[in-house]
Image (cartoon, rainbow, N blue to C red; front, side, top):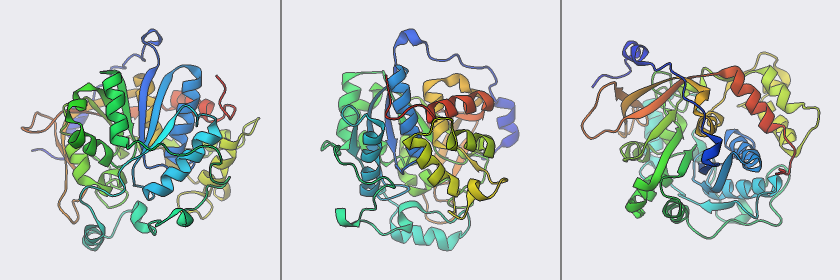
Amino acid sequence: MKTKGSLVLALLAVLVPVPALADEAGPEKIIVDTDFATMLDDGQVVAMAAQLQAEGKVDLLGITVVTGDEWRDQEIAEAVKATERLGIGDTVGVYPGADYPLDHGSASVAADAAALATGDGFVGAWGTKKPKSEADLVPPPDGFAARVAPRAERAVDFMADQLRAHPHEVTIVAIGPLTDLALLANAHPEAIPLVKRIVIMGGAFDAPGNSTAKAELNWWFDPKAADEVLKLPVPAVIAPLDLSNTVPLTNEVYRRIAYPPRPTAVTGLYREIVGAGLNGSGGYEEDPGYTQPLWDELALAYAVDPSFATERRVVWPTVGTKTGADDGSVSYSAHPVAGRRPVTVLTQFDNNRFYDWYVDLMTRPVPVTG
């Protein structure tokens, strides 16, 4: 197997734009599977999806929540509040997904760190204390939800129900660890062929990792799930770190959202949370030269309008699942590999058009108006 063959991939890069989804086909039905955090990239995706739903561009069927950036119950509390804040809590449910990865517990996380103590040091939920009760949950900046509660149905059952109700029409926008999708395949294998496609934020193909030197957080958090999902017989599109590194959140774009002519609850939280930067030590608000990549927002953009991607390629990937330096890392071939599935990897965006779209959605009135 050829791995990390940048020359081969450069030769295989596909440069032909893909037309946007036709409006006459109706709104794109999506489920957002997320390791939600208030107004970080996951929170922004839900805010953007709510605006797109009000516009008739998507039908947001629901939000499924998986442990990743934070522990699941903390994420659920923040996601439920987001639906209330956005005014969609009565129509868009939040469904509890996996609380733990398939096979990447605290012992293997510690072993990974010992084998390769590099990357940005962010290990998601493993870096925080797991809530044991509601009393341990931290409220979002504007408080817990007062009127909206999470749904009782499990994420995997909700996804299976929606896939059966809308066969070959549902795109799953997977912007957290892929645990929920792996569990869906195990619990409801008959539903997998009904998925229209999965658009995934995850992986580091030729780019360095972030949680470790080789691995991106989502796939490092549950490498077994990532590897299993990439073998499913479903069209899969990947927005990896390689793409994120080419679409920075510049100070100019940040300020267009953080300081709009008509501030909203979303733009205020954006300024408070994104403005502090990844390490919370100043970021955009204190350093004019500060920048960071955009991540999950790119996956949603592609799901709604594939023409945002100006370069893409097809590869057959494998995710490393051996504890240590290669956990969550990606190797791939540009040619078919037995037992693997081809995936489309996005490598370049039309940045200026994306930035305008992103700013527009993030600065629309809240609660959303249809």
